[in-house]
Length: 168
Image (cartoon, rainbow, N blue to C red; front, side, top):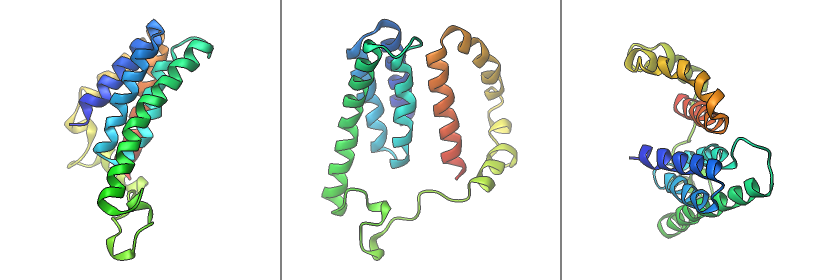
């Protein structure tokens, strides 16, 4: 259920970067901020999505305005996430250990090397075996990088981060 919000945020951020619209960047940030309702590790994806809002050009005043609008939109999701944690658990971030030991969540990350090998080569989990069209994405990324460098950067950053999080 989180993928539509991530894709919508990425699309709106890309539109903001192309058109220079801070309103699209604000909406992109709000959509990306919703990801925190699904998993706290998705906080790392929010800046990756925000890269597309900056656009492909230099960091001028418009790019900084779009970046600030994206940050403001995504902060709504972060504040909602923190308020929910305080209401439910009595702590801003329960998995970081600011609770009694009896109530702590399991650790967020595991063994990244074993997870990466499993994701790449395991017969039960391999992304290459279970999603062969993924190989086409690598071929298409070169073209996307030439046509839309900001969008390609955002997709590559988010994909690499997602792989690292799932692998751990």
